[in-house]
Structures are given as C-alpha cells and as structure tokens.
Image (tube, rainbow, N blue to C red; front, side):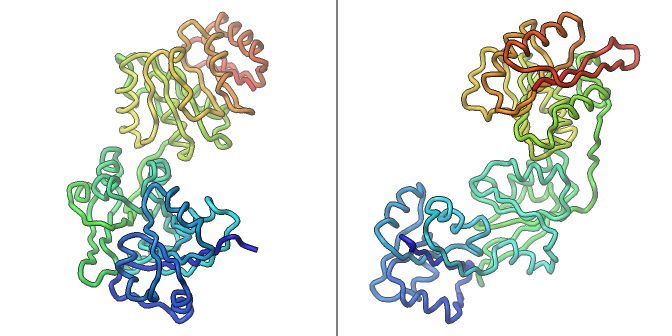
Length: 395
C-alpha cells in the first residue's frame, strides 16, 4: 500500500496541448496539481474547478514538504518525465511512493523530428544544472551524434565556445528553441564557431552531428606537449607513461589523482583514454596550471581539475576521494606523501610511482610498508639513453 501516489504527465511547450482520454480522466479526478509556472499557464484550462496548485520551485525540499500533506498529486512535467525529468526526482526522494507516468516526446526527440534525423544512435546528456563531466566525456569519445539539454547558464553559445576552445569544430550544431510553440518555435543550424557567437531564446536544446573524426592518439610523443621551460627530461616518457596507465587500472577506477603533474601528460593521457574518469592534477610549480591548460586544449581534453601549491599543505577534505593515485613528484618527502595519500585513498585503491633512483625506490618500499600496503607489481624500463626507471604499483 502506497503512502502517496503521483500521476506525472509529460507535456510540450505547445499552446495547443492535446490529452488522450485516459490522461483527461486522471486530470478530471485530480484535486491537487503541481508543475512549473509555464506548465500552469499551459494546462490551467484543463484543471477541474477548485483545483489546488503547488508550484515547483527551488529549493525542492519546500515543494516536497507541501506534497507530504496530500495522498495523491498530479504533476505536469516537460516531455518524458523519465528523461532527466521529475519522475526521477520523486523516485529518489520518495522511493516508497506509487508513480504512474504519461509521457510525451522530449525536446531532443522533437528536434530530431524537425530535422528528420534518425536518433537511435544519439548519445544524450543534460547540462541543466549539471557539471560538464558527461558532456566532456562524450566529446572526447567522439560521439557521432550528441543531444544536449541546456539551461540559462550553459547556453548553446557557452557550450559551443567550450567546444571551439578545445578544438571540437568537427561538429555541426543544430539548436531548437521553444519547440512545440506555434508562434515562437525556431530551428537553426550552425558551425561550432558560429553558434558560439549567436544569441538564443529559452527554452532550447541542441543536437551535435559529427562531420569528421578528430585525432585521439594513445601514446603521445613527449615532443608534442608544451614542456616546462622546454625541458624534455621533465616529462614522463611515452613508454613509461603508457605502462603507468596500464598499472593504474583506470578502466575500473572513478577518480585519479596525479600528484606532481608538471606538464600534465599523465592526466591528459588518462582522461583521453578513459573519458569518464575524474582527474585531479596537483602541481606545486606555478607554471603547472598554464602548462596543463595549454596541453589540455592542444589534445582536446577538457575537464581536468588543477590544484596548485604544495600537496602536503592542501585541504583535501572537499575533493572526491581517489581510487587511483599516480605520484609524479614528491619533493623529497615521499614517505610523508604516502601517509597523506593513505588518509584519503578509497578501499581497494592503488598507488603507482615511477622511481628514478635507488634511494627513491627504497623510500617507496618503506613508505608503502608503513601504511600497511605492499608492492604488487614492479617493471623496469629503459628508454633510449635515459637511466632505467622502475614503475611500482602498491595495493
């Protein structure tokens, strides 16, 4: 037996809404209704006399406090309530409630229909009040077709500007504005740069269609990065970098910390190969931030977070805890660094370190032992005429 029942009805922005008989019956029997301001304007003529309306506004906690007073509520939501929609919110906040959904086409489906674009292969992401992470990952993967829900901050122009900055001009952008509205609907196509300079009315959504592949190498030669003071010896060499990534086991990880990132080569290769992983780069040299930015743009890898300054002095409490850590630099305090990492590393997490001397090798073994871990893999590489490097993995 449900404590509360929700009927969630999807509608478009059309001022000529049609409801099938089954939905009209739900509305006619309803007493308490809810939705956004625009939804109220669109459906008010269908509501029974004496209907109570609850506006959906932020913060949602206050909305759900009002919901708690009633056993049955009819909610109007945009498009398909299960597509980044309000039904998901109800399920999350009231998991014991009973929900009936009556969907209509979502905005991205409507835009695809206007463009006669088959959308069965379209990857869809929402930037409506959400971070860039899923969108960045889709770009790096090079999705053939990408549907994007926007908001008033992450607008089509803002999104296109980010794409242009990171070199993703290999898409054609289509923007649908006020879809379903008989007087203000508009559908337009742009180059990426053109969209970054255009103005748009809300609500809107976007479909990106890939027109050519963008280069996405695995194993970037060190000469193709911007270097610290032009010093090629200050970058992890390609064979060492690829072996390091393999030992980090990133296909099974969610958060990577690159401690001592320098040029950002390991962070960039990791994010490029595994776009869904969250990467945080730590570097004490002030030049590190600009190096990471330039190399990320060069290789089309948005979304890497940079934290400057001494790692040992950072407040790590607000950062997502890592399940993989690469130590690219330690400033002569390797054992202290391992202790600090151990405090935040998730259970089952791993640490990978590249040792260039017998002293750092010994320090790593001792430091790992002190935190109750052990070295489970060790590989020795020699690249060209450089000194041997020991790649160590601790679990």
